Length: 279
Image (cartoon, rainbow, N blue to C red; front, side, top):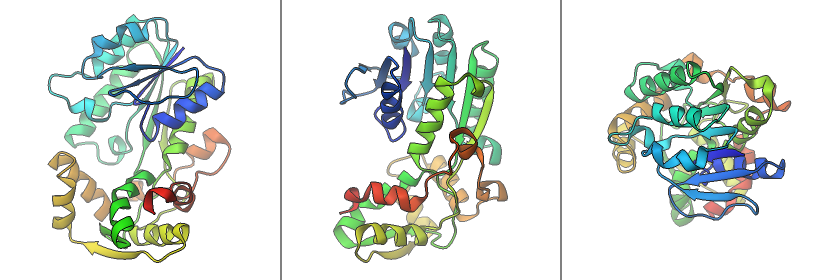
């Protein structure tokens, strides 16, 4: 049995589906009730309370660990999740980390994630670590303004990074859970090309078949909007990357193709598959 945490998100949904289609027994874990594929067991649990996962992990062979906001929950220690997995008999953990542990290692959240990576390496379990850069699905932040006003509003319109399709992250995660050859690997996951917010806007317009305007926000305007849904430190970190990406953050990684045997999907491909969210 494979346990998938964050099972109802942009990565967890396609990962759960892929594992089920591969004939695996899957337990999908999320904070709230949700629909899951036929044959998949669903459990509601909060990762900020690792002990709640004990009955879920008992007898599991592998776990996909996606922490999301649980990493920052008051009193939560994400390392306890690794301990619970080991006690439950889990043999392999695939951890969703972030490219920032390599490119900008000194921010508070990235220090915590690096420490968690180290805990996993030292746990005695089989492991693989996935380090994606920016997500194509972050464009969903623009869905309401595109639907209502035909406008994308974003900062740094002509500064790009190689955003990765969450479906590719899920596919790599499935491979790491199912194939022994990925044990001990740390993969950096990006899209196939650098794309700017203005370029993303053009791709959305092409998918919609109708014009979409681009409005450039100042950093201050973007920070105020982002701070409504994330910690201020994380908003500042994100804006630092978006406004002035380092050479390492501009690099197109070969790792998606190395694992999957195909090129990563483009932002235009992601936009075409998710166009209904913008109509």
